[in-house]
Amino acid sequence: MAVVYYSKTGNTKKVAELIAQGANLIETIEVKCMSIEEVDNEFLTEAKTVIFGSPTISGTFSWQIKQWLDTMRTVKFGGKLGAVFATANYVGGGAEVAELAMIGELLVKGMLVYSSGVADGQPFIHYGPVCIQDGDEGQKERARIFGERIAKKTVELFN
Image (tube, rainbow, N blue to C red; front, side):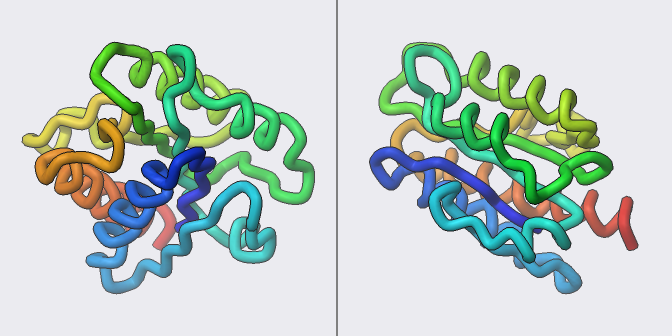
């Protein structure tokens, strides 16, 4: 599994690491976090699952992630499991729009999109976790749970 993110202030990176912590609870999963500025193309090519994260900027995901997704040519994402998460500086809206817009990008790339939704019960994670700044304890725990759920689905689909 790869967790790929753009982090403007460091908050999105912190949440990516929390998601990786949750994924690492599944014994057979190897997970690596990487900024779009330092992508390990070999690992990303081999990854069965890619989780994308972005800060919410002006009510949507960052142009940096958009540009990276639009210009990434060395890795084919079709057939991989995809998921998303977002961060925001304050409660005010936009994070759901950011996640839905990223989900649209993943669908266009031919990815299988999964969030766990309500299937695994509380906490419900409809599109992906959202953390305000780097998250309070509840938000941090949801990020870890999300990582674990995506890792379980990865094993279910690809092992």
